[in-house]
Amino acid sequence: MPLINLPAFAGDLLADFERLKTLRVDTPVIQPAEPFLDMAGEDLRRRIFMTESETGESLCLRPEFTIPVCLRHIETATGTPQRYAYLGEVFRQRRDGSSEFYQAGIEDLGDPDTAGADARAIGDAMLVLAHRLPDARLKVTLGDQSVFEAVVAACGLPAGWQKRLIHAFGDQKQLQKLLGELADPKSPGVFGPEVERLAIMGILEDEERLVAHIAGTMEATGYSTNASRSPRDIARRLKEKLELATTRLDKAALSVMREFLAFDLALADAPAALHQFAGRSGLKIEDALSLFDARVAAIAKVGADPGVIRYRAAFGRPLDYYTSLVFEVEVEGTPAVLAGGGRFDRLLTLLGAREHIPAVGFSLWLDRIERAIALAGSAK
Image (cartoon, rainbow, N blue to C red; front, top):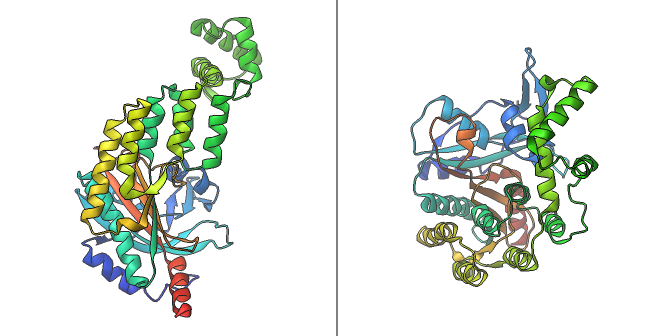
């Protein structure tokens, strides 16, 4: 029995989903916890409600729908492309003190037209909100992790640093902290005392000697290699720490990164600005910009108002499975996010799909939409 009431507009919302040619699905409230712990990101991991099965399997109350819908798609061997719609309760701790609320949304799986599917997700999110809030002016913020990843790679950073920066995408404070570490030769970074000691001993650069040293230390201390990583795994991690700690961005590359992250402009102006930036910076990011250009053109074709969409280069969402497009929709002048989504092309493969399945989708926060409707009514 739900502890909260379903908003009155939910029935009309489902009718909208049907008109958008989606298949309504539901998923169990109790979910295996591992996919969320592995793939959803730190922000969600610390807010989910955990439990256990009788056999000791880690379970959780459903904290969101994207992973459960993808798991259901894989388990039922449904062909693609397929568009799913959902509406139901999710459970996670929120900053306002609530822990149970309704979400609805669409997951668009398997469409090979990436730009078109991205545009459809944004357009559909705006459409269903406009039907609930006909007099409100919506505001859409759009980011693109794949463009960010292309810029990071083109700056020539080692793989370890690329991974750290990509993991921090969307967290402006953490990104600036990492750029500070890359810029400041005095920064301690990740250069820990054990790495320093091994560097002084002169064995950190010789992998075989380092592996033998670690194996000997583990044997002498009675530390079982079966309980954790092998000596070679540890050796490679120590060498990666050294590489991370000693890597520095020169001033020109740092300036390029900071110039890129400062982009905040109307979406219609973004393609030209990004191409000009790549040209004067000497960055080879044509593939990422080609997809970005195609998406902007596709958004115009679906009829979404380009005047309410802004591109922010540093904008991301706190879920680790996003790979490219990310977006959020608000009512202009209010801080509450009513809809949010993005592209998650790697997720279904990670969840066990036998073939690559491109995917994009969005979620709607029904309690926030209900409050926005009430606020709009009181303002009349």
